[in-house]
Length: 145
Image 1 (tube, rainbow, N blue to C red):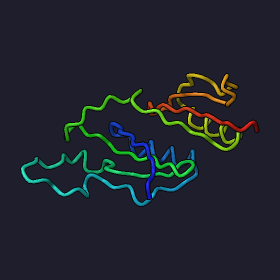
Image 2: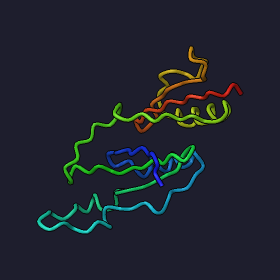
Image 3: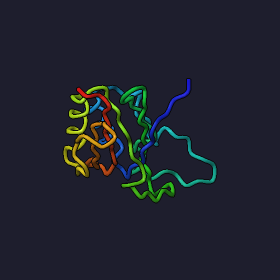
Image 4: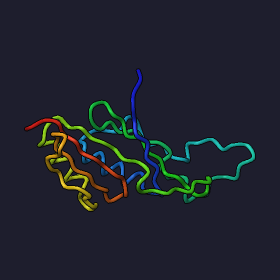
């Protein structure tokens, strides 16, 4: 079955970020959090530093409407040079304004609101924010209630 998902890369914050998102959406991970310690060592590659072994290699969390949020830590020891911030935006389209308000408030906790939820010229209820982990979110609700 085909699906669309969003993959987020973090600098050593995947587990707290996904624990937070799980509490916001009230869903459970699709399977366990996979750790870099589970990865077989590649021939000719140096061993993974002990400090990186418990980092999250892969996690999946269903959020709304069948969309799956995936994430990983991006350790520098593996050559990652992450520029987190404005490179990913996730658009949520809840069925009700009550859900829009709840999700927006929960995601904004500890974050920064760019545009509060409000009626927009295209007829929807829309707002945008950056959560406390630097991830950009848009909430767009077409419902009038």
